[in-house]
Image (cartoon, rainbow, N blue to C red; front, side):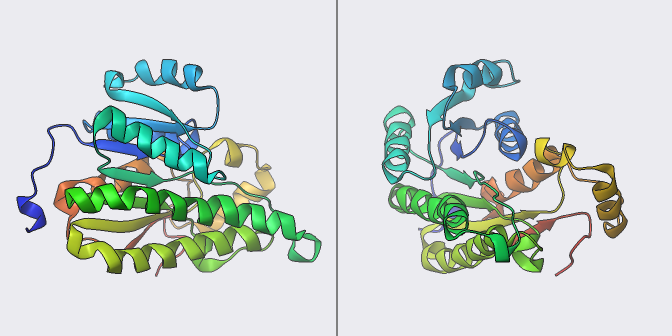
Length: 253
């Protein structure tokens, strides 16, 4: 059966990991506004997050699911909960991630492994958990959030850059495996985005970064959400294995 012949539900179901703030929050909000039922994945403070979600336009379609990307059992339980509550998972957005920045000569092995475990092993577990139901329904959209440093590298971020570069290669490999099942697998690679993390940078750092960005500004979470919503749309079925840069021209493939 061709993908365009697959019968999709009137309201598709999306899961966004790390959705309590920053890019994840913006993506979840964007998917809600686009008409999806969205499960906002978070590790804690579910009631507080649910209250924020319900205040959004379309918030009645917003749900919360407890999810720890460093815990395989938590991932399996979250997907099972969504399948029980909604019957299917149409879209997965792998957004959750951490940083443990340090020059390599000072970096402990545990600091390297922790970032790899959350940023790369976590998405591996997440994708593996949703693939069987997606293959059964012969439809799915998987979008992972990488970073410009996954391509360029960055001093002090060997662990983070390795995790994001690995995520891009992982996504391309899975795209090859499941493309015939109506499932697309893509990556959005942001540059510098306005988040709590970047707002704390000293002016001397931000001014230097802005000089390297052709559009002379940081991006917004909403701009990342627009890219994700495009890849999540049924009409994007001929886009798979792609890495979409959203970085203001900071790095051009």
